[in-house]
Length: 333
Length: 259
Image (cartoon, rainbow over all chains, first blue to last red; front, side, top):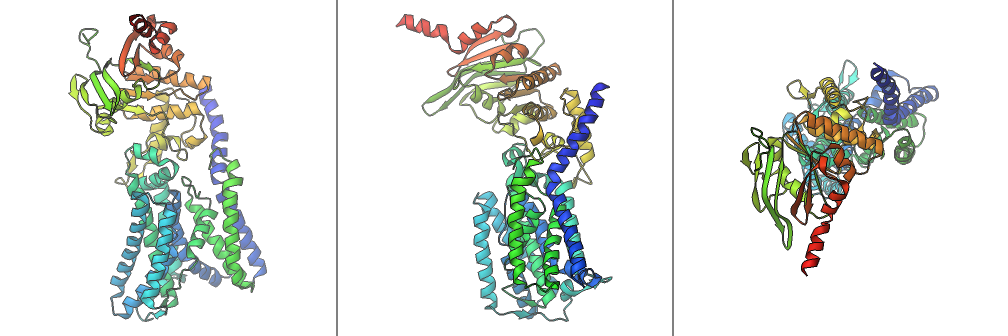
């Protein structure tokens, strides 16, 4: 009996400190988000209206969808810098093939398949050939942006507003923008996969100690490749969302998008060194970035500041991640 | 004869195992046998061939010649998987745990209990099974849902051994399990070895901590320059005798006399 009671006592304190240590940054970002919501609700007139909040959700939908996939990539200690260029390429090609009379459904499937293929190439080089993903995806960033520019010759291509596909970016279900619904569904599925499936477990294991995972018989190279297919496909979906929202495909879309996505993920407490990933944190991170951008615009602050603020937040988040929160938990990194 | 007692088949017999790497004779005809539930300490100086011999047994190294008989059947291993399927588990020196994954997750890494047709992890069953396994091995880790990165070295080593044991092995090979552990933690691991062998699992223990060997081993096998130099009964052997066997003291004297 004494063993049992001892166990219960250590259980409570150890579990509490372990949980706080692991989730310190997620808790912190939740606090920051609530503070920002209160701040903007009192300072910006139209911030706390249903219309604006739906608009905000629609704005961050592409970021949240790609950030969900990026959480898996960063969880394996990888990085995907090519998502912004993939957004541009998929949006541009969607507009071009629709102009050439493709069926919208076929076009949609083809574009997402293309995104997955780009991710496959990223994953093959980084996971099977052991080339640092930073280099692979940086090269892919350049290649895909160039391909988008070449395909469009730098012009925007309009998308016919009568096609059903435009509803993906502009439509509403019961008043809620479809991109917002899509983003929430993707994030929830991402959370389920990360925390409740063997694949999610292997993603964390790969980032934590890949050799250990390999010795247990898991095909770690396949897992390492799959996460890039996820970001590639997610970036293609984001490209479709942006192009259909604007009714135009542009090769300049999604510039700096990768930075925004990575900021959202890191802000949520996912470690750039892998092994620690929080999908809830990613959702909160993406919301925080969206609230800042939206709130600053409503306060009539120059939109140029938004980028400066986002970069500053990324730096702060990484600093907090590696220096401050690490002290709370027993986990190194 | 290899069989000590009538009716008792050896768990594993390695006969005349040879392995050569270029100019280096790593193993020069080693014969080693381990009985069921027996704990054999494998000792020897660095480069004596202990690790190579164990890698042969675990399927990680294919020998040039020699025979392995496992439970009375002649076997040959091309990969570690072949050895594992027969029930030979090796716990490597560098632990091989994922620090960020919790205790239960590490115990079942790569073969998690699943539900919903294999789609989802059965987290509840995983923690319940982990608790059962740890209790059965008398491993005192109060929580199965904290990351192993937060555990002590001894607890981590215990988790690593427990993981190997959950595969239901017949033979467990432990490579330096007590290196870099605090004194109290060494006790934990030695107790664990006793518990495991009491359940009928044969254990081969590689260690440089000679005092540990006398605590848990039935037999001590000393390797020297790729050969098995001595096969001693742990109960009747002194530490001095063991040390002199390891450094091959009297051999050198004899050789000196011959010259």
